[in-house]
Length: 365
Ligand SMILES: NC(=O)c1ccc[n+]([C@@H]2O[C@H](COP(=O)([O-])OP(=O)(O)OC[C@H]3O[C@@H](n4cnc5c(N)ncnc54)[C@H](O)[C@@H]3O)[C@@H](O)[C@H]2O)c1
Image 1 (cartoon, rainbow, N blue to C red):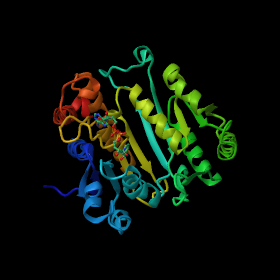
Image 2 (spheres, rainbow, N blue to C red; image 1 turned 90 degrees about the vertical axis):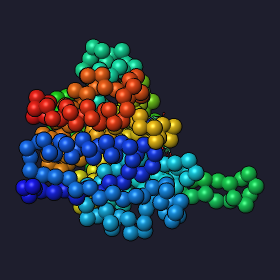
Image 3 (tube, rainbow, N blue to C red; image 1 turned 90 degrees about the horizontal axis):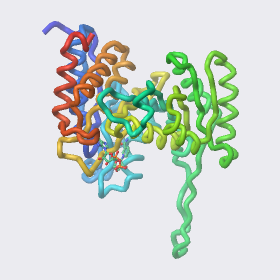
Image 4 (tube, rainbow, N blue to C red; image 1 turned 45 degrees about the horizontal axis):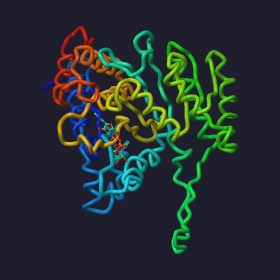
């Protein structure tokens, strides 16, 4: 074997449920993409068996020094977390959110992509070329983790406070990121999602920062839309969208709506980025651990594979990433679809089709 010029060290955390199935599929496709690309690099995977099983054994979702372990890697490839028996807030805060916050992965990029051969519930998808990206503020807002519970001794009178945190620094960096992203797209437009009519402190600061940052990007079209109106816009006028920037909770909800409109939660990709590259970034499908279908070999691997393509972009191999995205389109166009998309293909069928599509020179290069 000739030696490889660059080997990237990737930590994989398959996590729970279908996480394992889709991460295995993603690894197979990304390895194939690297092999056939003609670019001199390889991916070296280190699997970390963290998640709800680990919690059952140790009382922790990951070891106490988990972040130190991850810090030395070039990127993290994540499956999903959450399993019946472990409270969801324990599994999420113990692993995924601990990594996102611990590594200041403040930009969560979630493209909404419509693939050929996939039927969308949107009639507009038949006539319009739809594609937009949700940029989620990933470090604060409604998921800042601030608050507490008290007065449990008052029978039936316990109280809970969950505070949102909006900082000028947090708002500004996600706005600038969104404007820079918009400049790379055909349609140079950023829509800011707000709720400043009701949330008169945090969301008014969000709006103020959006207006201030927008002034530095006169070449980019802008609009500010209430989150409820934006939910309707996703359905009724999706052709008006390009980059949609939203707070942690709002973007979480809207991006699931976007992926459902594109056909299934199973196809949506995401990147949790630390844009300064002080820490590794993390790439994961948008979907959860899907306990209802876990272990049956029928999970759609496209969300995980497309997240892997975003990882290749981040590592500096955009052409290989494009080849992976082309393989996804070739596979869906050929009708190799899992049950969530109305087909009968297994995870393995889709994975094999993706690898075969990569081997075809017309697709791969
Ligand atoms: N990033 C994460 O790790 C993450 C995200 C969301 C939910 N969760 C956790 O996942 C668990 C289940 O949550 P949920 O049911 O609300 O959301 P989910 O995304 O796991 O499932 C929602 C629906 O989408 C389907 N689905 C999801 N992924 C699919 C795939 N790859 N292929 C085909 N169908 C797919 C499921 O079968 C289910 O019907 C919970 O413990 C939750 O906390 C984790």
